[in-house]
Length: 384
Image (cartoon, rainbow, N blue to C red; front, side, top):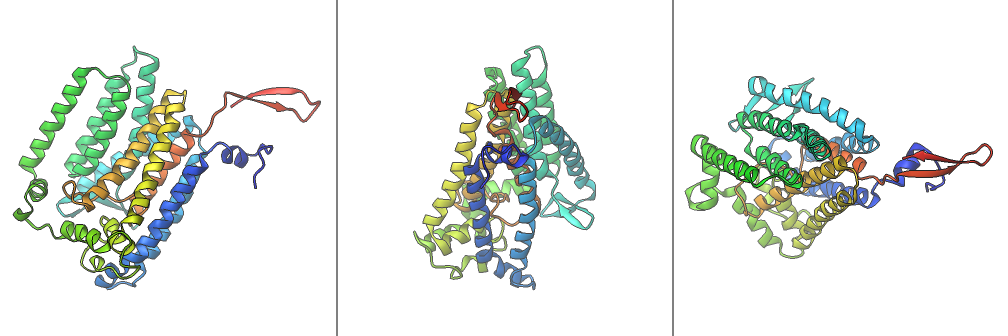
């Protein structure tokens, strides 16, 4: 056990970090390993790989993800801002580079190979972007004469432009929703509500009119008979087959026919094998993490921490909600991972980076501590 009387860097971290959030995140990661064991062997067999190929790689990605999450959670707010600026510049540049050097997969260029490793740099843009716009919004709330809101909108425009060119409308929607939520927190004027809503509507119409696969997905969602809805239909059927308590580990059938059962549709595999009760427990875990983080943000006296923790929590929760909604055919199909559960190295490590910053910024920060100096027993006040 770590004593509260210890004044080491680890003790300072342990007694100020949100340990319940840590345990909830650990439970999610454990669920990810179990669901990967259930969902990925049939996919590996279809590809002629070792049955546990994706399980082993999932765990391999989890190791650096945990290291990143814990390491970042030790950082100070100033260090978080500096690191976020570097991560944002590098990842946005790499995202732009995918337009020229990335391989085209299903009509989009989102991946780039660095040192023999496939990376999706747009995943790292998201948490870094949230930190930067939170910083700008916080400065705007402190100093009304600083044009921070204009800079934040310019950042959003730059990110959206690069993502749309890939194209990646799922990530674009996710980032825009989080940005609008943070902008709303600043007390934005009604004219901005109209402008942003109008731009969103125009952007959606242009995407529907000019990009075939976007139009196909929306048409299939509105009228399933108009196209192939095999994956979504199979996912929904898995919830019916699984019932409340599931068919049992290894007894599912949907994973044998779904090409993305280990990634985008792992939630459907969990529903069939472990039941709706387990799925509801996973939903409860996500809800607990998001709501607890929002509560921490609400209690924070630092505007930057309040904006950043809120944005990172919404980014995490909205991504999870989109994935689960696709599995339940509640929204048009969109390739987006379920945080810490779906297979995917770039997604897992970027999520760990974002949650690490959330943990760091939501740590308890007393205004001052009264310490007894070891020499002479004098009382010394040390700022937190």
